[in-house]
Image (cartoon, rainbow over all chains, first blue to last red; front, side, top):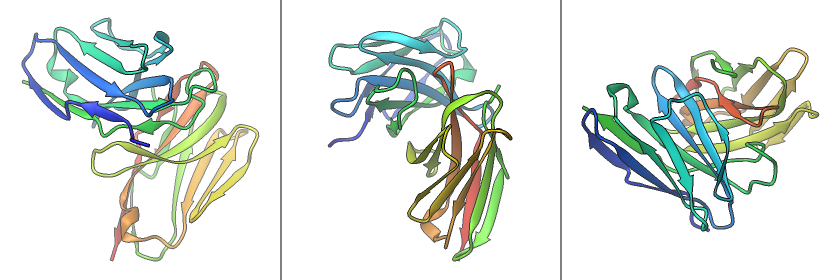
Length: 116
Length: 110
């Protein structure tokens, strides 16, 4: 089975721009979660999607949004980029057997976003 | 705030020795998971222990969970150079969110 894929792997943007990141989960996985990883804050949960619905959300501003398509692929969007949004964005998928994040999660390699 | 807090933040040991990392969390959990990350890449799931379990083994890994102390430990026995990585605990809380700690950086010396 192919693993979780994320595109693009690297991205450079300037302040004020917006960005869209993409995640393709493992085939059969219905839950997709997004995380932001920075040296200062560590790994922080952004949101989780299951069957095209957001069913859990972390404490991030509304500039961070996401969606999930019928084939379970997911995108996250960050609008009006700030310097502090520079981070490694990780996507993880799981079967979604348990409500929320109770299952083992399979992570993609991440998208490294740099905001200048 | 972080649910999981690993201790120590960094650890260097000789190859062949055992490595122990600890994790504390704040609220009631459904399960606690340990992950490994190599050099800013994706995380790899190591082991999951449910709140009604006290100990779990997987190869050279041994995880314990003490829900009364809200703590867990990860033991890696007979360490190898390939074990050099950052290790994270992740607490899946009753609100169905998974909260990661900031990790322990493990360095195996040859």
